[in-house]
Length: 309
Image (tube, rainbow, N blue to C red; front, side, top):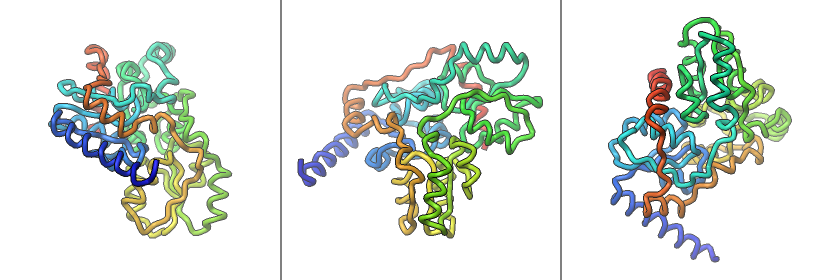
């Protein structure tokens, strides 16, 4: 297919989605790791916390969530009177799958009375078993808010270690990890700095501790976007999933963004395409539903996440 034909196809898809969006009274939310054309199409692009707030506040009748499964579930819990559609139901999160509700119940039984903070990268069932939910941008604040001196923190071990460095609480950590962030190594950062000695390194706290030790700033994706606009550095090494580069270049076009590793690609985030967004709006397919009793319990943990700025 020629470039002109490809462009024409993309233009048709965008136009059709815009038509369906108006017809369905829909809002399209996209995570910062989505394909560039999905980010450009979305009404709102952001990190998990920003998109959760948008889902809770929207007056749209339909939410099309362009992200992975747990994000769409979260939107369904926070907007129980809305129709939530996930364009690609197979787009899951390996980190979220690393802990189940029965496993968390067993952990709680082994540590009775210890509050549970779960990362937003978890299923609705795990959130329902948790006392607090957090994102990477407010994990330390949420953890410090929990009562007592001990906290069960699940499922991301790397994020939990980062929180432990900045909290007075003692964290009981689960051994989960993000396979995409785990591909970024300290050698990747050192190589990038040899090539760009004046660069600033920004890293997501899902990265390995030795990567975070080399970073100038450890930030959520929304924090990375703010930092890209504000830093005097011209070259920025970015240690997170590659999809964010598209957003960073739009927000700070005069700066050079260097991926720490070209291997840091989440295949699940890239499953959603323009065609799939169009199809889900045409057919109202990919409906996300969370059982009422689970949603009610998960809502408590999520509300505490949203309350913690």
